[in-house]
Length: 613
Image (tube, rainbow, N blue to C red; front, top):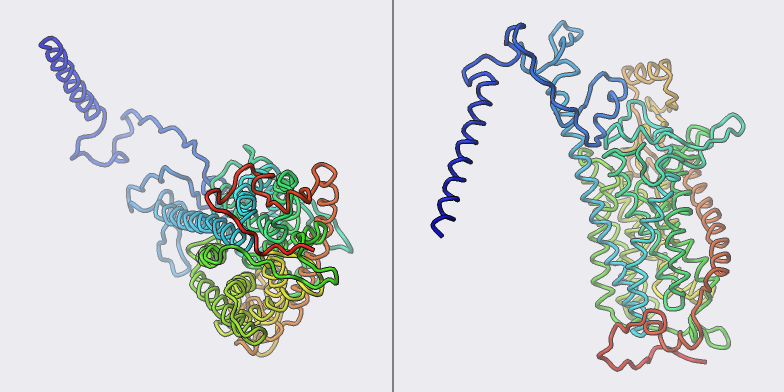
């Protein structure tokens, strides 16, 4: 023990002396605390060894800030100028002859870096909220299905997250956003997440009648080294969780009779192909976004947060899948009369709806991709107003139709309002949000009864009506109610207004175009945002019927293109794994036959809601 203590004491002495020696050597190599700044050291002094360049991927160091001359390198700030302590290099001189901070100044670099940092943090946090929506979907869908298949439904909602993510990582992101920087953009546009997004500049394009039609991106497969950048990784996370919403919608429409093996290969496909292709056409700079520049249809097809790209896309896939699968056993009588098959847990349904409503504050405001865009306040308020109006409208309609409010329909009403406001949330007034939300709440009730009764398509959770039908209504409502207060230059189209006259300028990057745009602004013309058919009624300077035509074009395209892809996929995938379990397994419930585990093993299940015959 004594030897051990002595050894510890000696080790401590040597450690302290070593640290003191290191401190003394460090002070000897550098200037003393009272010395002049390093920049004032005489030229004869030995130059300091340059620090190694940072190896972290960072979007602000990828390019020279789109030609402004401001180098946004990170994490090492620029060395301070010895004269002003704010600039490096010669400062600039403004028109009045006053000295301004130089474009390469430490101050400018720090401001730019902080702005990008705020936007990245905002986008990541809202993406995390959207990811948590998966729990809401799982609860809503499981609660609206029978207890005997609860583990099966919950497991599909769980596994679709990793399956879709992997598919999106393999090629979905590249197809969707590989040409992001090549698409139409406003004059003066800067990527909110940093210059690294400019690496996404490869788009397959065809020329028809002299106009470019973007079809598919092809940069970023497997998030390879050529796109190893913080801006791109941030965009990937945010868009991946959006894709997952699309992917999980059919798990509700096809619940209780979908083979788990067939579902697994679907999970890869949906993240790789349909969402990515249609998403490229709208958000990746593709041909629907180019409708404004190519054909003068408003600002092109506009979808702020995904009524068509996310929700309608998922709803159409669910519609085709449910139609091919057919109804659950016992859903329809011999004469075709639909029979109600109630879900097993309304508590799950209502709790899941609240989780989804909370997550939508990430879904819609997060789609600014910028915490520095103050429009997030308008987007958030419009989102909750529309959901409230829709839930109340559904309650009133159900009272009128059945004499009872129906808790599940109130929940679907709220979700329908959230889906509908997703596209126009940044472009409409509060009154517009209330109006379109209330209409969505009415539409969803009639749509549920239509698919259940007239179309005889069995949708256990109402996903087709909530997401498909009201996704379509959402993008169309933008073309009706947008009030011109936001979205100037959207998709590269500038609509300038003065004294009742509108001039359109398409940003082609030419110096003459930019000069004309600036001259008109200087002459008092205002750059109008996205405006709908009834824009003046909601405060816009003018109406724009062409915007509604762009919205209609995108809606029809989504239904036809995504529906065709889904039809081909489900028919082809059935050749690999059959789509539907056996008759016996479906009667028993899919928990044991498909999953090997019961959701409620401690309870004796009495299936009172499965009519046979």
